[in-house]
Image (tube, rainbow, N blue to C red; front, side, top):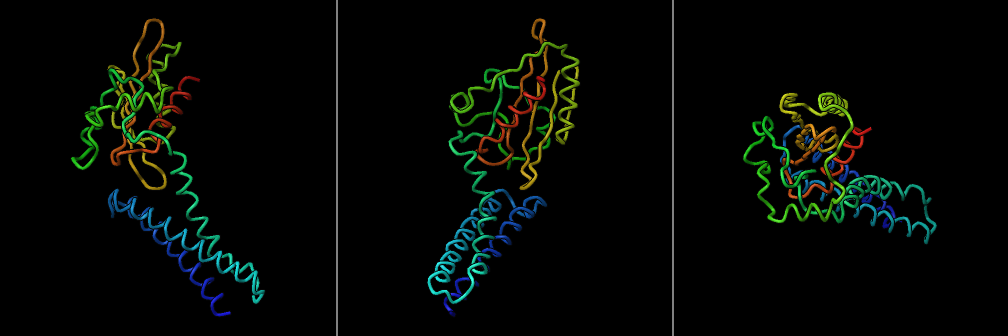
Length: 242
């Protein structure tokens, strides 16, 4: 009876600890109280603690089934909460599994759109915008995201530019610069949960009787992006091309 109670109690304690660690990692990074690496360590700790809660809780549940000394439902509290905490993190990791470990993506590998205004918002602690590494960056992107190519639209470039600006605003990205004369839009997208900042530059230019749109999305921190930058470009261009 006591052993059963201990398993159930410790499972709930561990699951609550996982919730606390996740909250500290998320809100700590959102409010700039901790950096990128501590936040990742926090998420790793969340997953580890959550898994322990699930395992310990399931042991308690199996004992309850075997001994029939208590109801089964109360023994599931800790493992259920642990599962709810661990699942979102694992789903994010699994969604990005197999993606190349790069963080600067563009539709034009030969002449990627250049950041101008965004450079002033970056610090030496952030990833470089000079695309110096890895040396095989272009090859890695081609292998990982072969579908990312320039978008050609049968509309005037000035109209496409205005539509692109409107779409950026609709997505809630913070615009750093928008120059119709240069056909360049620069903005920052802040992820909802962790508050990670990824910078975007969109280039709009005439191409014969069409308008060519190129885009670049680069994470400020982290070596890999779990495919987030490519997905951002992909979805934006799909909406712009409608």
